[in-house]
Image (cartoon, rainbow, N blue to C red; front, side, top):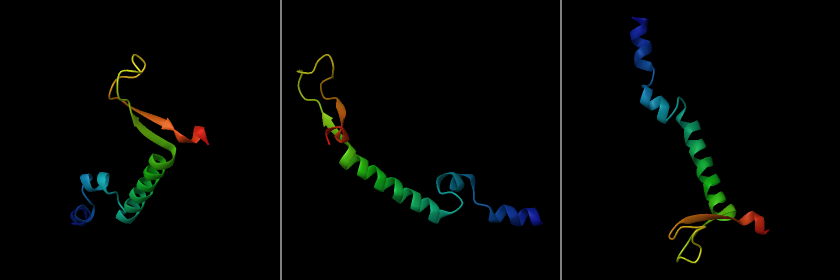
Length: 73
C-alpha cells in the first residue's frame, strides 16, 4: 500500500526532465538564461549577414558570422 502512495506522489519522468523537481528553481534558471542570452546577443556577439560575393571564398554568400564587439573596446 505504501508503494502505491509513493508512486502517486512522484512526478512523471517527462515532468522531471522538462520542469525538474522544483518548478520555481526551473523558472529562475530560465529567466537567468534569457537575460544572459540577451546580454551576450546585444553587447558581446553581433550577428552579421554576408551579402554579395565580395568575400568569396572565405565567407559564403548569405552566411551569418558573429563579430566579437569586446575586441573593439
